[in-house]
Every structure is written in C-alpha cells, then in structure tokens.
Image (cartoon, rainbow, N blue to C red; front, top):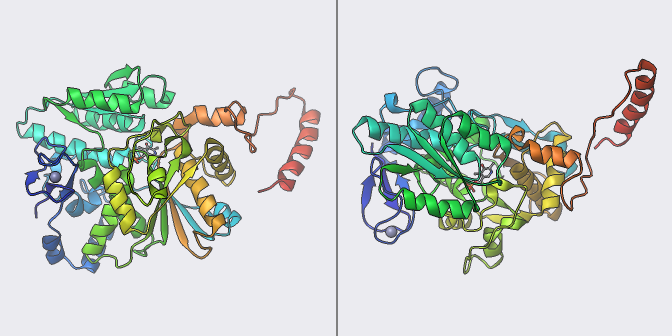
Length: 447
Ligand SMILES: *Cc1c(COP(=O)(O)O)cnc(C)c1O
Ligand SMILES: [Zn+2]
C-alpha cells in the first residue's frame, strides 16, 4: 500500500510523501494525499476495518492508541511506527448538548470536542502527521533542518509542541497582538523561535512562504496536505462514536478552510472503503468579519474573491484569503453544503448561552453554535436531525474573550448572559440573605 501526493486538479504526476513539495508544479494548485483505495478495499471489508479500528481504541500499543494513528492505513500507511511523533491526540469526547439543542427544537445535538486534546485545538490532529513525516525524512537523511508556520495561534501551538517532542527546531510567525496570551505562551514554552510580525495572518503567510522556498525549512501550514490526513480522522472518530451511524448534518467553523476539506475527504474515503454508505450534510460557519466563502456561496460559488478580513473575536478564523478554498467549495458541492455566517454579537451570545448549559466554548465554536441556532430557527435543520457541531478549540485558551464578555467590555455587544462575582463582606447573615435572592433569580431566569 502506498500513498502519494497528487494535484487536486487532476494534473499528471505523483510525488512521494517524503518530497518537499506543496503545490502542483504544472498548475500551481494544492496537492492532496492520494491513497490506494483499491488495495485498502482488497485488504479488508468494511466490517473488518470497523473491527480493526474498534480493537485499537484506548490501546497503549504504539502508536495505535492515538485518535489519528488508530486509522494509520487510511492516514499514512507507509511510515514506520518508530518515526511517528504522537501524543495520543484526538480521542476527544462527543458532548451531548441536550439542553442547548432542545432550546432550538433539536433533540439530537452533539458537540465534537476537538479542543480536548494535547495543545487545546484540533490542530494537533494534523500536526502529528506532518511532524511524523518530517521526523521520518530527517531520520532518512533529508536536508530539512526545521519546521515553520504562520498562525492565528493554534497551528503554532501544535507545531511547537510536536516539534519539541521530536527534538526538531520550529519557527512560528504570529501577527503581533492578534492572538491570545495562551496561544503566544504555548510556543514560547515549547522552545520555538517565535516571531511576532507587524501584520495580519495573511501577511505572515506571505513571509513564511518566502523563507521556506529553499526547502531547508519545512512549511507546516495547511496548504501542506499532510495535515489534512490527520484532520480527516474527525470524520472517522465521530462515526466510531455513533457506532458507524452517519449523522445528518455537521457544522464546522471555517477560516483557511482546511478542516472542512479534511472532514469531506474523511467521509468520502470511509465510503470508498465500504465502511459507511450515506454521507452527511456539511455546513461551514464563518464569522461575518471574515466571510469570503459565505459571499461566494451566496453567488452559487461563481467568482470567489478574497476579502480583507476585519477584526473578529473568532481570531483563529480571521482569514480573508483562504488557501484551501477550492477544496472547500468542491467539498460543499458534494455534501449538499450550506455556508452561514455569524456576527460578533451572535457568536458571543451563542457561546455564552452554550456555557450556561455546561459547555465552555471558544469563540469559533460560538460561530458554529450561532449558525446552528439560525439554521434550526429557519428550518434548514429539521427537528429530527442528528446534528454534530465541531468545537475546534478549548475555551480555556480564550480567557480574554470570556473575561471581556462577563465584564461587558466587548465592544458593541450586549452580553446578555454576563455573570459577575458578587463582592460581599465576610458576614454569614449577609451572605445568606444575598443567596436567597440570587438562587430565586437563577431559578426564575433558568434558560
Ligand atoms: C484553525 C482553526 C479554525 C479554522 O480551521 P481552518 O482549517 O483554517 O478552516 C477554527 N477554529 C480554531 C480554533 C482553529 O484553530
Ligand atoms: Zn495541477
């Protein structure tokens, strides 16, 4: 079994996964990892694959306990296990969002908690694959010396951790003052060379592409299609968690649009292997301040044009010129797709409301939940559907957003669910009096 890089436009030529190549030499489009699906089909039937994947759940047998490498044959079949750099990423829970779903008439709403992983975002899923491949190349004498990425905060945290785990130097290019404290500290702690540039993400992306041209520094951005191979395991994991029953609709926040492309690729390959028959509908949720895909969707995908992304609380998706737009549009066309957007106010209120039902949502998950609310209210999502919202990061990485909301200091946002600490003298009588009043308030206003 062999997997290779191929042009997404179908140009001739295939390239080994150990080659330093990000774009098709003929047409300049992105590449994708092409699997030998026929060989995989011959190896096992759909039900044998299912059994194999189930048998690896939770194992310590290296590296199959990882939520990515559990599906190794579908991810990178031809890498030796000793080169794999893994933190047993993935394996994230599905949160049954019963109370939240019922508020909008949907009884079967689940949130896939992709932020419950090593560095706190789904970026781990792709980074384990990319860094493993680089590690394997270096072990086999490649001239690659370091790995680099431009980032809106989560890619760099993941790259830094995986590179540190493998002992490979990493360089991260961050837009100065546009990421959270946690996201900045993560690569610092992991020993990355951290460059804060006076530009936005799209500006950092241009620079990192220039400095990786000599092929001694390996480019770890999502134009690198190795990451897609790890991220596509979100599809497999969701299925395994539902005993291989395909949900009706999956809502995923989109910025550079690699993750939605990955999700689609995962489902397509699972179908090709006979593991599933049906396909879900895929919805991309964008922030109104960075909505080029939404604008294109409104035009029937004619004439996609990049936009200048405006500042958004959903900082990881503040991207106006998404690198994986072609892959994403083709995915949406194949999955009966919808693109919907959420304003700053909608994403903040949705996140806060979700928190009131026990979640602790990052702003990007807020975008996806706001889109869920809109589609459930308009009837585009029917009440009997099984819906999965992909939560992309852990809320704890976005304390500035949470604090700002509850202090009501977010600009132009009402913050309807703000909840402040009550400052009181240390007096039991007084405390009892206040509690009586407050408990009543909570009961009466229960959402
Ligand atoms: C990277 C990221 C996204 C966007 O994913 P794309 O593949 O760029 O569309 C969304 N949310 C979070 C938290 C992220 O880190
Ligand atoms: Zn091509």
